[in-house]
Image (tube, rainbow, N blue to C red; front, side, top):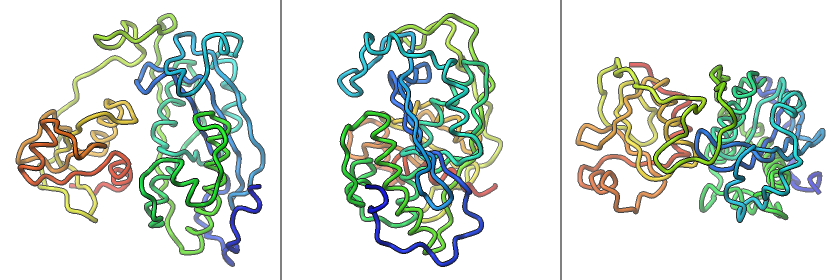
Length: 322
């Protein structure tokens, strides 16, 4: 039971700056790209100290192929009778309102939620998010990797149905409570990030199967040319120091968040997104530093610093001005 999860006593004085409530969220999707859809969602609402208030779950008809059924188990037949996102948007919003969204790799869950609300011509009532990967790093937890299963094992939480939104949200809620209490006890600043609701959407019909050559015509968010970075390159990233505006950032390999969304966040923070790697590159972001892609090989040759996607997301919350 969640109440028996941790024997740590609550801090005598809870930090006044901490949020007053949390919405622990997990969404399962048809894929990871910007035109993919949510097929199920779950929310555990927690109070200021991480105690569960209630939980909610729904499947969602994505109006398209459900994607990797072998992962999430939701077939087209199962989803056919599920409500459309616009039909559950109000209830979902009520679960999120006035709370910090908490998720494992929160930028992904937030991006998928924000895009669904944009398609429904609504705005998700979320202003801040907290990534449990970032929090585990702040706490220095001795985890072998950033998987939810590893975080759960650290706190003795038993996973019953991996990749089922309700069970993943439960597991995360149970692991988040002792993490939150440890942070409060040690006076750790929570790694909160701003959520900016999207205001673009497509008036085109429902998006179909993604085509191999790119995104379908009428995709809700057209590609665009980014303006040049206005800041000079301050040099290479140094470990344990913040990123600085103007740094040249390159990406390599698969990312859990759509690449363009990661690049957007970097540009918004004042960084220069580089399409290739050179001696002037400040940092390479990759989840597979042992691969033999040209960028990784060049990074080794040039001595370019390399970090993973989760670490990069944490650094983005506090970029130094030029």
